[in-house]
Image (tube, chains in turn purple, blue):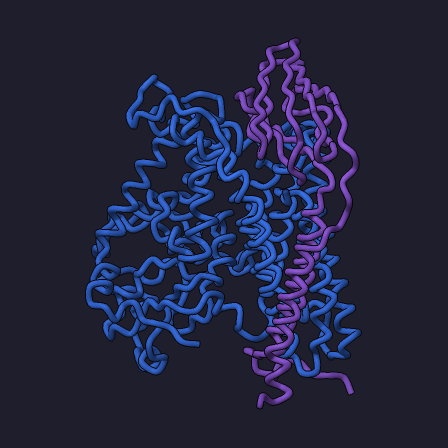
Length: 163
Length: 453
């Protein structure tokens, strides 16, 4: 037989763990019907315009990269997409956005001092990673609170409670 | 908490007491520093092809943040080449034990008003608002490193001990704060032995070594913050009473009581800087980066003002407001400032996890630049390691973002636990922790919004 306090000690992290697994598995948003999209991205002065894109999972996406000043590249993390555009020219790549999430795209051709930070983001919806991560963060706070109560490691001698 | 004394091993003790292994590493790093400065000042202006930029801001920084600071504390400070020329001039000895009558320093004491971390905090902020050109332009990196060496030499010739490292170095305060997490410490075996030892050679020095360069009395060490792991006290203690211990991770964070105001501010400053850098350097906001890089322009002034306002005013004010709310909820009799100082160590795990996540992201995206610059550090067309032609390719694109999430969430859980433990230590005060936990959660979600896949 386990005591009520021992049961609480086991139950709290178990419930937090189950909640975390449930939050990771439950579907949050439905996917919309896929379509074909063409997105024009201008690259210049270490920036992409636009720098934040959104498509739907399953979309057939054509990226048109236009280099406004020097040679720029566009490497899309998580997809085998790498484009290089010469100054004043347009380069294209087409791919199917078959996995959801937020993916960084970055310049792949050294283009000047700020080249390593020439970054944009492509969101493929339904992208729920942030919502899931935020949920896990909340559970992490609760887990930390439970740990603090379960095992005090600072003697209760500092400060004083108001009457 | 249990710990294991590494220096119980005769071999480990002999290796750590001997100054020659340490000196060998220092000399190697000094040579590397010379190459970095030469590359920065004389080499290519293209950052991604520059040995200075790649080795300092990608390789060294990542090694510092991912390995050295969390696992070895101030081990970097024990071999850092920046203060060596100043220290050698101060002592009149290159690497060896003290010699009578050597040295050309004035040996003044560091001014009382400038003690603590305030000068370091200012130096850190000064570098922080110039970080974009420093991170991307080799010449800026070269000038910064030369400036730090000159400052270390000048302060070494005027003041006693390592005044530069202890009170000025912009990275030193950073490493010191987060070294509290590391599972390594220098502590005395028996405080009574130190109390009975009247000459205190660990502080004053003797023929075997120098008095603590970090101006610390080892007998009173409670946390790692100001111990530079230089091993001088191991050499100068005639009773072999100094030990290097392996201990549980984060042991210093369980120290009760309020921290000094400068240390509490440092914890907030570094958390805020980690958040700001993540958004600035890894977010999709190119216009903000352009402003940060245009030093001296109106846009840069706006950026610098925004950065400083966020890390040095808005975030401290937000955390102070959360503390005030926590005090009201828990009905604890403490001033908000005293309560914030007491809670401040709980920000260390969260701040460190933000910096690790940021550094890991930057490292994996840019590590492949290291191959070419290692093969051709001076851009002379060499191919020393056969890697000169390696092209750029970001690493770990699938695994890394999830790892980042895991690190951030682990840091948040740890901070939440520390907040609770500290609040439990304040009688009747568990509710004190909750507003600060909510702020920590919101800040973490902000970082996740930039880094989550």
